[in-house]
Image 1 (cartoon, rainbow, N blue to C red):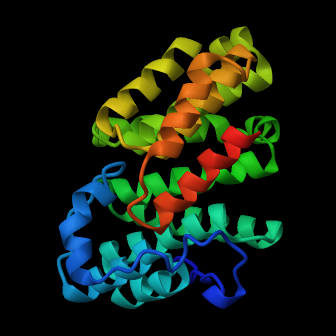
Image 2: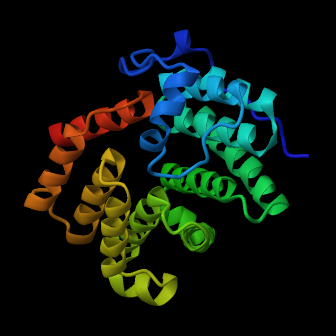
Length: 268
């Protein structure tokens, strides 16, 4: 049995932008906006009213309640929601570094166990990759590469794209991986040791944006990748990507948090 996932603390303990609670959702609104809300990682609409209600909690920004509801619902759909809610909370909201890493490790372990039980569960594989990647960034990419996590992450993201070619977020994540490795070890070592190439990073971001043109996250990650690859944060393309990301109108709390990141990047 995978470990029980400890969920985030209640919203009153969060110190966050006003994104959380700003977007009221119910099951009907979730169903109506489902395709737009999940354009980055396609998912079938909720099959039950309980699952639609749980997703409404997530999109409103009540990640703790959404994770708990997902666990109660169970099965692959409930577990996917619990993993997503906890991973997003850990990445964007959790202020304590140790707790953030612990939550990411738990998501990664649970998601991997689900994928091993069902090799066709792309969502499980993606949240395993997401947790692995964010954990690697937190402990330093160089250290993660030394521990062999880089190869695992690259293989996992490539597998996701193979299984679900329209998974825009996996394209963004793999593009960011290529750029970060090149930034840390140089393009020659990155190419020879990890099979990483700058031109492949660009291809992945362009494909991701073709799949999900309204992605603020994709544009922010693309801009950061260009800085890593070319070393110039003043490039016109970088500034344009940040501006375009900030101009995307958020549809829910998660997208609002992405919007806050874009605004912060523009201010730097």
